[in-house]
Length: 153
Image (cartoon, rainbow, N blue to C red; front, side):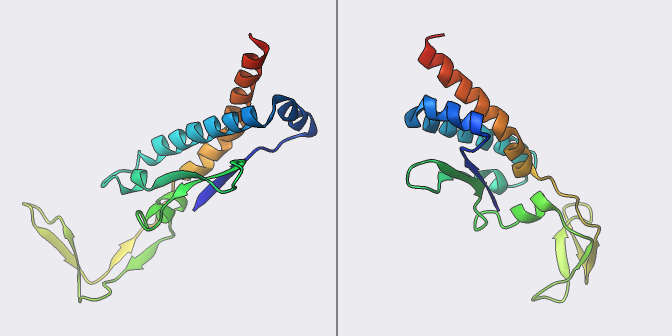
């Protein structure tokens, strides 16, 4: 599960980027990645019990020239990220290796038991999609800042 960010846009915007030059383009993209990762982290951080979901978030370049970046979750670290992000349909949960399910509850620090649980489903919270939707505006802000720097404004 990941989002890929790259410098793309209309012909006019790409012409502005070309005039800006590769080093400043890459600076703007790297700053955008950092901001989008921060937004994704803030939104993913709202779903915390163990901190694994937040800790599994990463950003890394996927091209050798640094023009394409990926922001996503390490599913080895937080395999539940897909379900929290995209949601689930109502489903039945049954034990895989035991006869009954057990979880903390039942009052006075005890446990609750059941042969199966009917999970109502979860709508999901697509924080990576939300963060990616903000990327173009964030990138534009960083490009404008770089243009203002080069013009001495």
